[in-house]
Length: 85
Image (cartoon, rainbow, N blue to C red):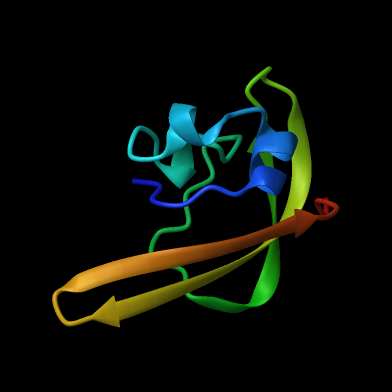
């Protein structure tokens, strides 16, 4: 479940913080049934994501999983990118 959402993400995806925080999962924004399946990437990966209007666009995503005791958090840093064919 998404716990944080910044103004840049609102502009890119079209969802406000009120629409998304504690209501959606990041996987709902990935397109083409992409699923990270416990990926812990130090390098950026190319993935398609989807805006609120259904438009699909390419991003470079860095995914980092942090384990704090019994709680696991996954951090996504998303930037404009190009999907490799």
